Image (tube, rainbow, N blue to C red; front, side):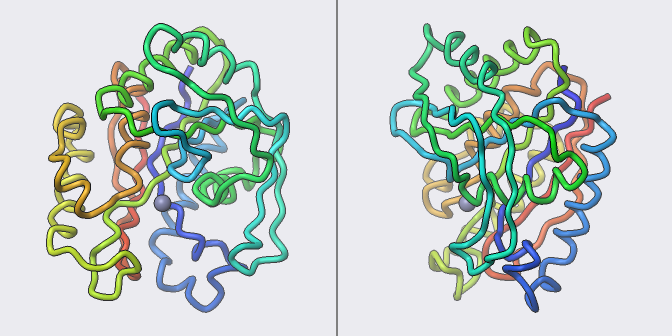
Length: 262
Ligand SMILES: [Zn+2]
């Protein structure tokens, strides 16, 4: 059963040893993450599924990381202190691949060191869950509908698995909100972030699937397809979206949204 579900950003700046004096700029995001940490801890998950835009990617297939053990560090961002380890719920990943066989390819990868799109959420959400198992999923260039469908298949396996499962979609919103955004500026970026936040808060799943592809291309959010997989997983559940924070101090939109399960 699904016991916890959230959409979260993955700025490495919120890792204390990375962000240091910049942590303050994302204090709302950090507080929101701490709220989620309480929620996930009390939901007692056996396994956390993380959908990451920065996991190993293949154009025409989804990926599931089947390395037996995972390591998390933020050395590439100058943090030589943080080190975490998790065990992979390998059986779960294998079963999802089997179930997908008739629909689209799923590629097994074997990356022991996890990407920051997975590492940042796990850093916050597993503070009191050191023994939780982890499944890491990467999205593809397939259509939005296929991402949603992939989520529905993962949901099937969650039902079959008989475990308590938390699902976390990792992703940032528009990357072009300010003149000094690392990816450049788009005047449509604000429009996109406001629109998608409203659609999420109002559970307009169909509208999220059918967002204008030109707009998405223009503002390059890495979180849209993670969100689609999450919504495919959640679709038939009774849940209430709850916005915990939205910040964009560096020109990239960071939304923390809890999908509270009834
Ligand atoms: Zn990203």
